[in-house]
Length: 585
Image (cartoon, rainbow, N blue to C red; front, side):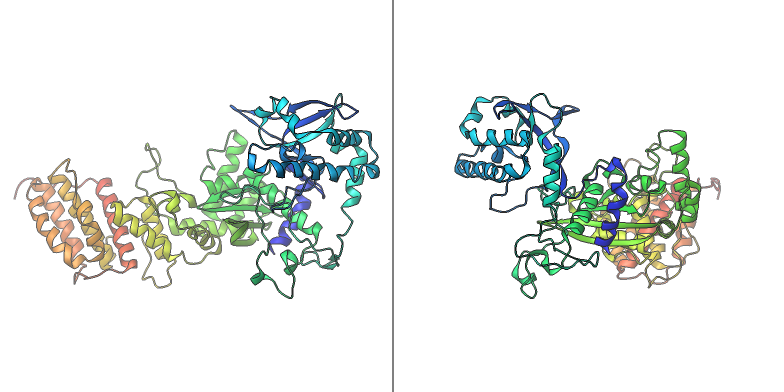
């Protein structure tokens, strides 16, 4: 399903010039320099092709014949483009000097072997240059040190195009694409169902996944004997035709690292998520901003602002609202999560459905997540109504690098699949609360959503303070918040409250801790004004009425209830003004 969907995506992207999709037999490479030659093959200059981008100079994207250089120890020269190691036999590593000379010879031999077949004067000029070139001559070109080690192409002086773009060269190259390799036998392609030559390696390599090899990774590959079957090695275990492999790899590269990749991808922990719809939609353009939490920031004009408001309404009411954007809510949408895994990419998850179903699931997710906000809209740091997934994951670890690698994919599966949230999510949040003693809006919302979808939950989980809820853990959390507020009122400016000293123990073994802090509560209560003292004591007594027995131990679910009760009561204490009862007895 994944490869078939990407195979079909190629046709859609190829029709849009903005994606710069390479035709079969070609690839887009980063070209840093051009070797300018005279018609007789003499070298005129090595010209820098890099473009200014801010304070840096970056290589220029160019369509060239063939794919990126495959990994391996053998010599594998490209056709009419390559790096200085092959074109000039140049290397800064003295230990590789001999190998660089052999690479330059291999590059020369490949072109001389087909000179008569191509029969083009510009191509012959390249051959004359390669015949006469001595790797030692590179030292005379000081400008080359500024260019660095990028890819280079060839050009004849006075011409605007490049040698690999000449008609005879292109015609010859196109004719080579249909020539089967020696000893190859047609087999049935698992994507198209047609008989064709199977690709031994799926090219071009996939780039744009952080953490994967910079030279590119593969989605399908077999490199150990343990993975082979019936004597079939490399990718012949899962036969895909060369054309189909090229199409799905090129389409995936376009949305991973192409010029419009920002519309089709977002990051979640160590997972790179790419998405696309079967046909162009307005919703697809905004999905990356929606998942990234920058939807409203991306609106630059009235039209864009109206579209973002419609998308926000779709999060509140469901996918049917997308009709207001001019999109068909039943348009198929696909999400693919990829993570680095050495030379291959690991598939964290795969989801396919409709835009309507996707937004219905997102609505259900935010309904489960809904919690009274600690800082409302209009404050200096308001809590988001629709917190993005990366913001939720950030609450599970001290630093982003410590986020469990599998948690991002599991969380997204729960959101778009409508299932229970992973227990590891709640456990990680509880650990963070016990470590830094902070129960904020996002953590309380995460625990509420986890409890809401937990199949063993008892009753609904409230959005704000519920004084009628008799769950002992919830009431203990409320009680702890009131005792802490009493201490703060009695000792203004105190450096460490009972939350800093006792929260971890109180939320896990309340029977051991609460008798002690209830004793200190009486001392704090005595320091309050008489009216506040009466009001506070009434609140404590009201909370403790629902606690028949002080539990000796709280489970993970109970600790989540404790944190929610603490958050709700703490929010209520700072929101409502406690009424005065007077100073007379």
